[in-house]
Length: 106
Image 1 (cartoon, rainbow, N blue to C red):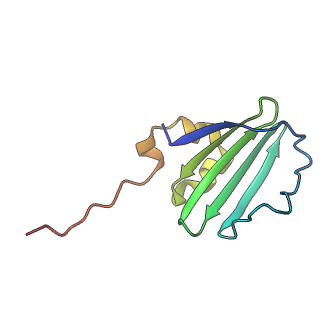
Image 2: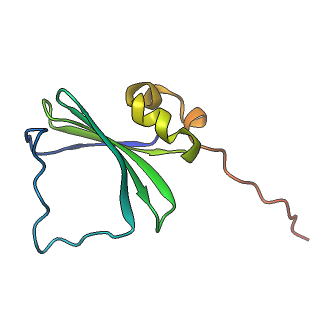
């Protein structure tokens, strides 16, 4: 299964997002690429440029649970439009394989 973290969040109406506190640090290297709402579910796609990483975030306002999953760049829109199907896939199918070194010690 894809790397994911479930966290409890405050229940809030999905129609109004509150602004971060004035003293909160804002990570300028994170950009919201996409956002959509469907009933009580909000789906976000973030790009963390400093880490060169794409994150899928699903918020359920009825349960207060949020799930955060790293997404392979070539699967980002697929994950955004079908987050539950994407998260149900084995990790190896959703993230690119690690790059192996071609040089040999010696």
